[in-house]
Length: 128
Image 1: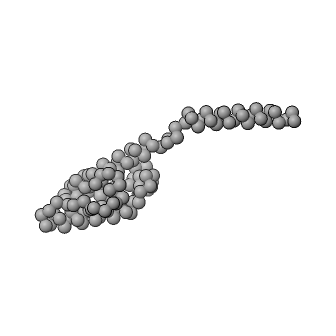
Image 2: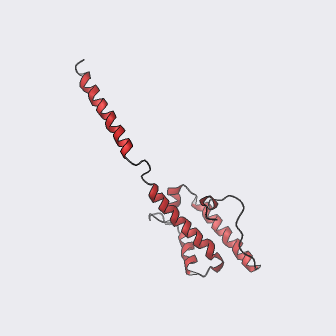
Image 3: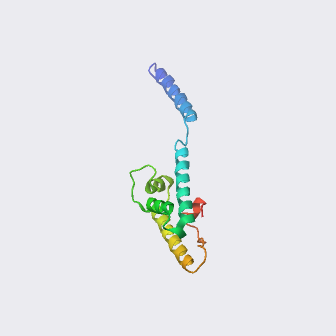
């Protein structure tokens, strides 16, 4: 019985220590990084959207290259950002291609590009 008393004290100490660290440590340690990634993605989407009718524009080409690059080794690559944010890179790329085709067909007929009415991966980000 004498052996149990020191173990009980030690167990209580461990409980207090773990509760302390639970309250002190930041629960969402990656939230600022995710917000930065979302901001990068939104900026690229806005650049793509605003300049899609002028596909020769250097900013548009840079955004398009970034979206369609399959790079996964860089922290702020499109693939990595989509993975971290839980988004489908393929679906977003599909929406971008549809947006570009729609824009080009509207430009050929003299109209302005229209936004898709259905909910999409891009639309959930609140930028379209």
